[in-house]
Image 1: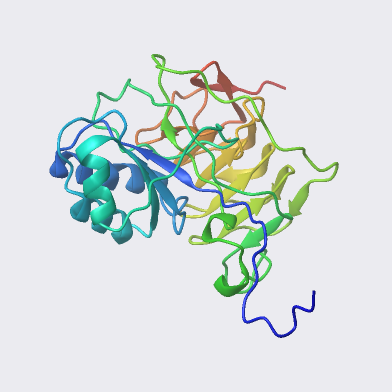
Image 2: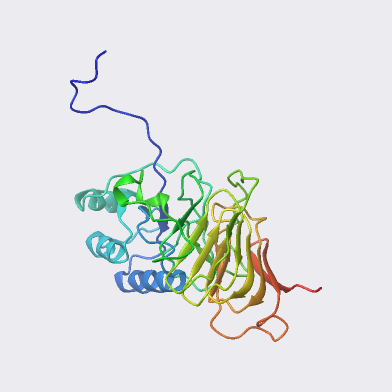
Length: 291
């Protein structure tokens, strides 16, 4: 069939999205929880399409307020999982029901109003793509891909999802994307506001990662210099990934979606010392690296 005269055509596509799991219908609690999660994670979640999972909530949800809150954090809602009256109201608010029958490979943010030790099951978001780097005016990263050229906003960067805890309600994901045999190596310091993402491979930074900078990898993250910004390893759910640094002073550490915001100085055996960050079940472990 000659398709040159067609105004449009249909092609298969895979769209990755993150799932925002609701545990409450209270608009104020939801907005507060969302604001805290986004503040903790910085720009990791920006422009990720989301599916709102309200299957655990029976109370009436203010969908317009929730959608507005998500969009204010650059999280565009593309679908909903809900039942009964909430599903009907979600449809009326312009949300499309979706089926989440297949668990994905990467963790997702959770709007959680439960106590801090309640950790929810993560869901994925980033599709397979080449290793890429983002932002930065003049430095170590490759030019950012224009938005119009991306298959979906979700292809930009991976994100952490759950706060580290010793008490969890579900195991961390074990599925991981295949890694490349070579690592992405950055040989210049990363300044505040810069982000580097190594897709399907390890990331090696030879130099300082400044406060406000972000380093992300589907594999391991190695920083040979002061790590003062945010670091995430195993971005697509690889629970065996690790973070290594010769000088630990980070703002946020994450492995396979389990994250810890470092608000206070660590123990003197770890602060500003060589260290390893890994997962032990669903607990984030920070250990000294000894010569």
